View (cartoon, rainbow, N blue to C red):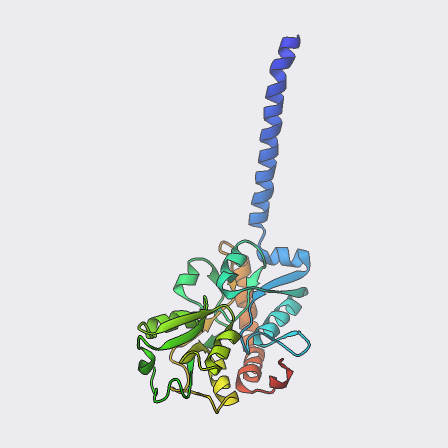
Length: 275
């Protein structure tokens, strides 16, 4: 009898382990099957990944986040009936942070590109941007075209991991690129005359030229690229993608997105709020 008991005990333990593993697998599958939208509604909070890009997202004098993307994400959360939580994240690591579940969606002026599309799903565009270039009057004296900066002795400052960096590599392959984790640092380096120019998302290059007319200028007018901007989310979640697309269509049709775009990109009425 004792012998039979000794034989049965390992079998019973093995079955218990298998049942536990199966239960964990079932729970994991349930989490996978639950869309991000469902998780957000249950949680009552929409977690948004973003980084500082003027005027997309920035801090006012009291440390509060303001900007076009802040308005967009706040309105989205309100329409979902949930609160919004912003998760500031270094741009160079923002997609990996999304994929590991640090937040639900990236709403941060992210350009839609084929390379990024291999890792995340993008919503339909809710805005458009492009790359501009602003230069130092003394360091880049006489530079009056984009081609003038495509030389081995020219230094261009860009923010790491951005489409500005990709555009600089593509259109100025011979120039030296200096990568900065923080966009403000790149512009400060330009003002100090340490680089020839900064390539960045519009309208900031133009704003810098207006704010510092004694030292900076625009070698070309407008932008030299154009790119669509979308929400980025994890793959395999069609319900979330459909919801975001429907929401974008709705606020576009009512004119709210255009009104917010005009305020943040067409005026500088917000300038006094920024630190």
